Amino acid sequence: PVWTRIFNFVADHAEGSYIYTDDGRKLLDFTCGIGVTNTGHCHPKVVEAIREQAGNFLHAQANIIIHKPMLQLIEELRTIVPPSIDSFYFANSGAEALENAIKIARVATGRQNVIVFGGSFHGRTAGTMVLTTSKTVYRSGFGPLPSGVFVSPYPYAFRLKMSEAEASEYALEQLEHLLASQTAPKETAAILIEPVLGEGGYVVPPKAFMKGLREICDKHGILLIFDEVQSGFGRTGKWFALEHFHVVPDIITAAKGIASGMPLSGVFTSTDLMLKLDVGSIGGTYGGNVMACAAGVATIRAMRDENMLQNATDMGIQLMTGLRKYQEEYPQIGDVRGLGLMIGTEFVEGGSQVKAKPLVKSIIRSAEEKGMLLLSCGTYDNTLRWIPPLNVTSDQINTGLNIFGEALKEVIG
Ligand code: PLP
Image 1: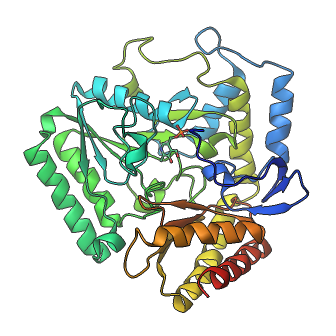
Image 2 (image 1 turned 180 degrees about the vertical axis):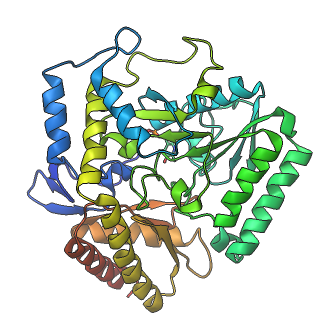
């Protein structure tokens, strides 16, 4: 009963951009299992890699032996991360990656505190719930929360009712204020940010803000952590969203799209930082599981061989253009924003985000009845998130846009 469930059908199987239900329905899946199946459901090359690996080794425990898929995955990862990132630690879930990133930052700097941004989602484990401020439900009743975490505003221009430049300036000012009033730089280990806000509403920060963050970190010896769990692995049309901002963080956390659905996550950083940790101080039984690593290798190769990043960029433009046309027709669509195939349409009703929540819920329901799955996000669940697979076709984008149009007509008129 504690598990949120958005749809009630029983799924039978999935392929590419579609999920097939056990009662014979075919649904266009623009949720990708919350941004995980970036190569489409059951990509044949990923499935083949998993099948082959299953007959070879199911569990090759990383403390005990070195396994080939992990070495291959590291080799592939080195080609898609900035050159300064040359050390790779693997875990199972996004939250676990975040917990380890914080531990690494604290030991490497000898400082305790961490700054996060309002609306962020970094997990809901006992350690990460304090980093997550997208909704109270993730922390309510679970306190006391771990200490040492401070929250600064995200440059969310639309909600702040500011231009991008004003939002950037405001958010940087507030961050400087936090460092002057609550957590001294000498006590601040890391600044942690999603380079595109995910669960908090699919918000793209201004470039100037991201550059400003790097400058503040450099000035004070604070580590910059990019949580690319949702924005990574081609989602924004680049391997990692950081490429849009030309800013290199000290630590990257990744999960979701890394292995097309197998449970795998990672903390990517520099050997210099990693060497500051005691051997054995982080780790886990299943971290870097051999099957998951094999799926990760096949995922990166499939994305590269099939030009999925370029497709994500092209299809993102097509989707965004179609959504903007609906925005002209419906004043309830307050904002359309995103990068690549990480797109949000924020709904407002009478200028209120709270009131728009039922509207978004009805649109999701109506779209499902018409054959497309969508998810919401944002503190008030008033933003629809569009997360098609990176190999989605132009026809499928058009089908999705048409279903959205019919749903808008049915729900709004
Ligand atoms: N970080 C971000 C940006 C996420 O979007 C998520 C999950 O949605 C997490 C961390 C947590 O990942 P997981 O659910 O695998 O623990």
